[in-house]
Length: 173
Image (cartoon, rainbow, N blue to C red; front, side):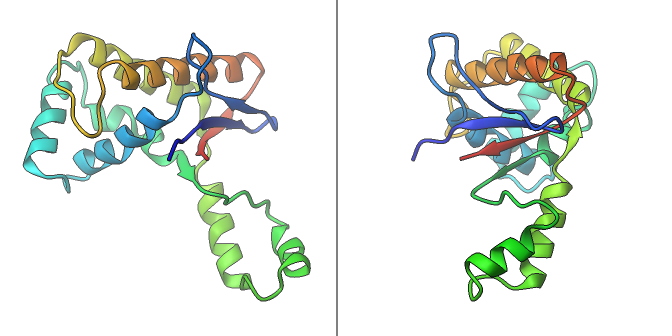
């Protein structure tokens, strides 16, 4: 399956990540983020912990503290609810959803919003670390594509900020 990443902004924009040659970005980013989350939560296996420790060894500050927004802001799937969505879902598909599930999903989705500038700073720090480190390819990291996705993410976040977005989140579809 191929994943595409979008930056959703508090201004209503939905900006697709594109690589310089025109292909959509997202697959490598979505492989990397759960592995990074496992490292930061110390739940990953030894190989994962050692790989990220090597990456973090090039950091001036603790990587996991620097990129908290990155780990908080992404989600995947068709969850695209607004706060008044339950009424619409009840009218369209009355048996498919409960009010409790919709409200839980809405709260979870609203918690994904992060400060755009802070997220951009964290993404740019990851880019610098990836460029400095000469780490081997793994299931969560491809030297070419992971860096390309992060650079596309940085450029798209910069565009969102230039368009006056203050808060953003990343959606994978």
